[in-house]
Length: 353
Image: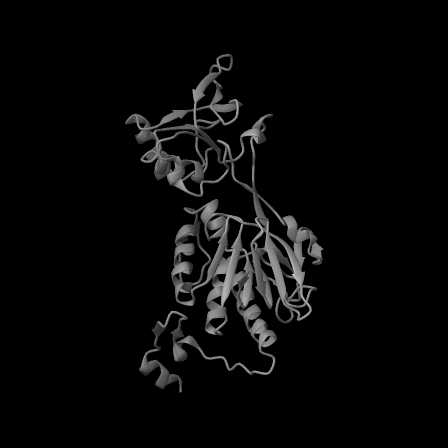
């Protein structure tokens, strides 16, 4: 069983920043996320999308923001359970919690902070009648380990950043890469579209547009897909493949969290924003886009604020007999669990004192 001080459900920007605020209080964090890497929507859906309302950054790409947050929390050595969904919660007699994932991994903590953004993400699946037969047997909706596709024949379907980025990446890994999109125009970053076109011109990938996958074939594992060229709809193409990866985005859902006994309003978790963003279950907090309260704004910077107050409340709950005296990082610096120390400049400390 994994034990920590604060168990954070969701490794998006708000969850990651909570690790930093908790670290300043000497509280250890562990994060659970159904996605295969930290960053939530910023990493999975729009890593190259510019964000304009992060303080101190006139413009920053979503993926860069995640990279910066990961660097910021590195001294506090958070743990991660990735590619697993938080399924059940059990409150023990000592008021601590055990959260178990869909793969049976158990986590024990006195504090649970739900920072799940818009909820857990479920892949948007194409409407193919025998799709489930090949799931985990040739069909995948996320790429967790690119090396699993080395030397394989891969067909990717989709027109967004994920489809483009993985097509580019796997061009140097897979034996053959085919990208299918139902339109001639793509929704991804222009430089990625240009790179894909360049790879096609060099003969390193196959690009079929406008087209769509209409059926799958294979006795046990996936062996081939049939693609319908929309310019020639009567002539479906059979393409021999080892893997079919439809990347049509992710659909946010509260998922199992909806069954935890939390007070829900319009697919969001109600919290007390007058103090600490605690839910109706003492010891369980909700921060970021997953929560709701009067005047709520679904902004990353609001999630950062909520994470800060949540950590202060969590500290008092874990150490009810201790009084925490807040010190500005400009005075106290940042001391990591790894022994690292970022000292505040002496001139600044003297001036403040």
